[in-house]
Every structure is written in C-alpha cells, then in structure tokens.
Amino acid sequence: MLKRNGKGNLNFDSLGFELFVGGLFDKCKNVQELEWLEERMVEIIEITEETYEEELEVENAQKLLRLSILHRRVPRRCQLYCIWNMGQRNM
Image (cartoon, rainbow, N blue to C red; front, side, top):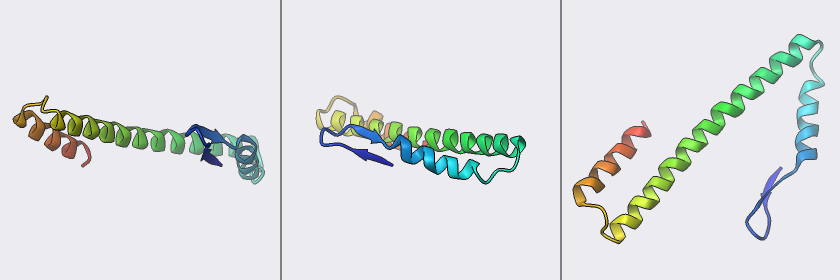
C-alpha cells in the first residue's frame, strides 16, 4: 500500500487502502459499530504515529550528535550527557 518511487518519494495506494477499510466497515451491523470501529482505528493510528515520530526524533538527534562529534563541535561532557539523555527517553 505504501511504496517509494525512483525519486524516493512515498506513493500511497489510496484505492487499496479504501477497499481494505471498506472491508472492515462492511462487517459492522449498525451506526454504533461503525463509530466504534472508526474510534479504534483513529486511536491506533494516532498512537502508532506518535511512537514512530518519537523514534525518528531520537534517530535524528543521534545522527546530529554523531556529526557534531565528528566535527568536534560538542564538548565531550555534552556528548556523554546527550547519549545518556537519549537512552533515558527510549525507556
């Protein structure tokens, strides 16, 4: 459903996703079940997005720290603190 093209841009198969979600909604027997399913899916998407966003922030911070260390722009004690702090955020 989600792929990268030759330029590295994301492409989303909207039709495939719509058919998948439609199949889930098709199992619902009333409006309450439709709303319940929608709420569950939104919760899952939001929590999953937040988790991946946090992981990307940590990865980006680690990359910046490595570059800073390579270019000796960050004092050693700050490097150690940043590494320790990133580890604490992952717990």
